[in-house]
Length: 225
Image (tube, rainbow, N blue to C red):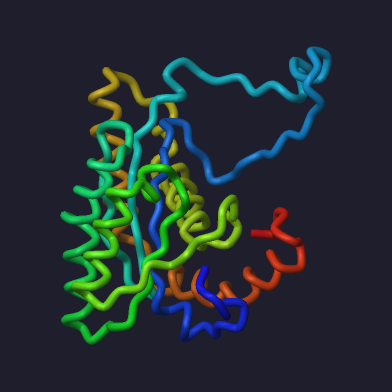
């Protein structure tokens, strides 16, 4: 993160384009569980530490999305693993048009956030982003390692999965080929994504000053977010 962001106001955070990839599983739900255990067989395989999965329950659809302020960016369905070339192409064909649309609406002095996944920080990607930043007056945010609690888009993924489960409770039991199930997942996720209201995004951005302070207080450990 840039120097001085610990003192940023909500108005400052409104200029950050939050981005990320996430895998939505067929049986995704809006909750997650952390299990801390010692690395021994007794605890590793204890019933309370084992979660069973249904057949095809791990079938998933990889997505990329972004938002800034109360404006939702595109949702992109990724058919393969993300590598530097495919990531650059994704940014060129989806992020850049979004930035251009924002500029047309008078949104300037934007900062682009991404985590430190290898395709994001590869030399080729970095050079592409530097050129993109120069072309559009964009700043590339320096993001700290291992800091998911800082990014509000993580909460947006949880919202998306919650709405999927709420609106389409049959998703976890869908039948058919992997291609058929993924097609249904994409259709449902596309619908739910574009139904996300401005108030949801606004609350996420408004949480940033508190979120940053909690991470500082916790010295980088987990927070309520």
